[in-house]
Image 1 (cartoon, rainbow, N blue to C red):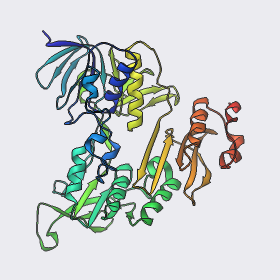
Image 2: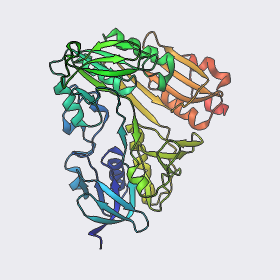
Image 3: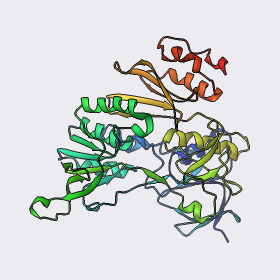
Image 4: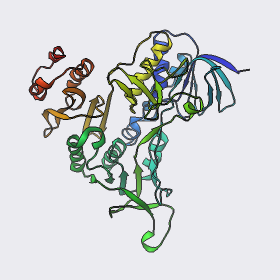
Length: 423
C-alpha cells in the first residue's frame, strides 16, 4: 500500500518544478502538490552560480525562486535532499529515497541535466571545479580566494561567465577552448569575435583551437605528484600555470529515471514530449533541460537548456495539468552577461542559418544580429537593443520572409512593425 497520495507530483528541484507549482496555485489549482528534489536547497535561480552569487553580490536567499515562506503559505510540500528512485507510470506510483511510496494523479518530470566531466590525466586533482549548484559556486569562491591565475576550460557560457566574474574579483583568467572564438557554437564567429573582444579588453586571455591533454599536479616540474592542480597542458602544446581550474564542457539531460520508467526518448537524448509537454506516459509531463518537445514554431523536436526556457515550460505543463489544453508555442528567450561589461539577450534558437544581418553598430556595442534561414528570421541576438526582440518574436512566430526587407532589418532607425504583413 502506498504511504500517501498527491494530486500533483513534481519531480526535480529546479525552476521548472518551482514555476509549475507557482502557476498551479496562481491559476486556482486546489489539489495537493508535492515537489521532490535532490538539491540541498529550495529551488533557486542557476545563472547566479557563475555570476552574482559567485562574485558575492547576492545571498543564497536572494537566489531563491520563491521566498522561503512561500511554500507553506501556498500549501506546497517541499521535500529537499530526496530523490525519486522509481516511477511506475501504469500504477502512477513513485518510490522515494526516503522509502516512502506516493501515488499521484499527474506528475511533472523535471530532472534537469548533469554536467559532463573531462576524462583526462590529472582530472581528479584538487582545485578542478565544475559549476552546477550554489554549493559548487561557494566552493570555487573560497578556493580561489588567494589564487592569482585561474584557467577556464570551455568557451561557452560557463567558461566566459566565470572568467568575467573572477576577473572582476581581481584574478587573472585564461580561457582554453576548442572553438576558434568564444560562444561560436551558439552565436557564430561574428558574434563570438565581438564577445571575445570584450573579454580580452578586460584582461581575459583566450586560447582558441586548443584541447586539454592533461592537468599537471603541483611539483610536476620536479617530478612531484601533489594532490592539487598546478597547470594545464593542451594537445597543441600550450602550457599554462593554474592555481585553480573551472571546467564548462557541457551537460547532458538527466534521463535515468525516465529511462527506467520506460518513457520514450528523443534523438537528442531528452524525454520526448508532444507540443503540450505530455510524455509517452499518460498523466506525466516533462519540462526543462531534459524535455525534448514537439515545437510548433520550429517544426521539429527541440531540447533547449536554459533557465528561462525551463520556467516557460513549467508554466505550460501546469496549465495543461489543470485542463487548459495549450501548446508550448512561446519563442525561447534567454540572457547572459559578462560581469558588468556586457549583457546579451537572445530569442530563437537558430540551430542553423545561411545569412546574418547586423542592425545597429557592433563597434559601438549596440546591435541586434539577425540570423536568417531561407529568408526567414531563425533567431536574434541583441546587445543594448532589447526592444528589437519583440520584432524578432513576431517575425519568428509568423514565419515572415524578409528577403526583400534586409535594408530595413539593418537600419537601426527603421520601423519594423509592418514587416509581419509580408508573410
